[in-house]
Amino acid sequence: MPISAATRVWVRFEGIERDFVAKQWPIPDHSNSFTPPPVDAHALFIPAKNSFAMNGAGDRRSQQFPFSFAKTWGLHENSYRDVVYARASKKYCLRFIFNVEQTLRSAKTDPFKAYVRLVKDAIFHSDHLEGKGLPVPVHYGIWAMNTGDLGGVVLFSLTQYCGVSWNELHFTKFNTEANRLVISIGRAYEALHDAGIEHGDFMERNEFRHAFIDLYAPGLTKEDALNGKAPFYVVGFSEASANHACRRQHPVLPLDSYPTKEVSCPELRGIMFLLEFPKTPAEASILAQALEWHAEYSKRHPKVENRYVLVAQRKRFYPQFPPLDPALHDDLYCRVLITRDAISHGDECTVEAQQAQPSGSQLQHTTDATDLLPSEYRTALAENKLSRQFIISF
Image (cartoon, one colour):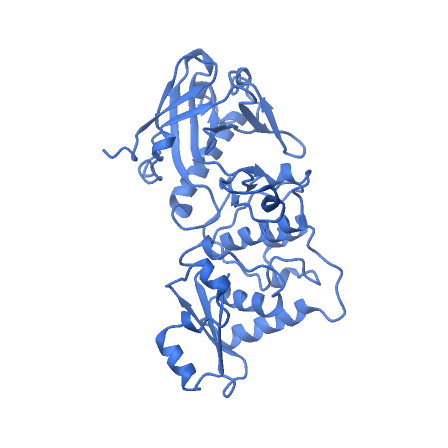
């Protein structure tokens, strides 16, 4: 068996003299469908200082605890509503269910419900998120280990470390306009919706505990972190659904008018509200023009998927805002070619998704982008059959 395909990992808690061996917890039909843990995840080290944390009541901000606290988790039916989590070896996140034998005795307790959320999140990753280039952590499955009198039998999900929750950063200097727009919580949720994923667990105020920004990413400076250049992730998919047909007809941006329910998506509309994006309606609303254009374009080209229409709309009406990130999805967020035939339509007349995506640096430094076009389009352009061509990238 290749070393990268480990069926067990070793966990060490600082201050505890022994290591604990964890084996993959069998989830029917899913146990072999997670990404195998990398070599450096085979031995996980959890420091003693502020070793564990849990989302607190109220504003759901992280509260840190020593290891001794974890020993009592699950022993009282309704003491704890959330899983305990810890950062291990600086690169990985472990979300724990302690005292499993006690936890699984009654399905009516909060610890049992936390266990269910942990498993449902893992299954959703396996079925709908893994390997699709979406802004979510890599999931390495659920693991089990016997810690004896330290915490009984323990389950934990092993995932990529994603940084700090927006619930935490909202109260700090990192709550900048750049981090709300450029890092874009909104853009990440747009990416999920375009892939048919509705998160389903954030609608209360201050409930962005599932939106994470990695301020410790390699090579990231403090200035970068303040200016929206840190990696962004969405976590916690226990309430998610994978058959979402998003009906939004506008981007998730601080628009000059608040979109109505008829042209919006309930989840993304709620996100706009939480990000404080709604604006006072303007007399000459750009949103009204964008919605009119969206309706006309969709009517003219009913076979063009809505996500591509939204790309063109964003470029045309909101060029001052950053585009969606091409790194989010190699297939879904591919380059989109808009061809303008001024003679027949005088407007955008077709949208074609090109699967061969150029690198991000190419897109950023190419002016007219004609060198990125397929040969038949370059020929048509040279023969003056197409009046204008340009590439819209995310």
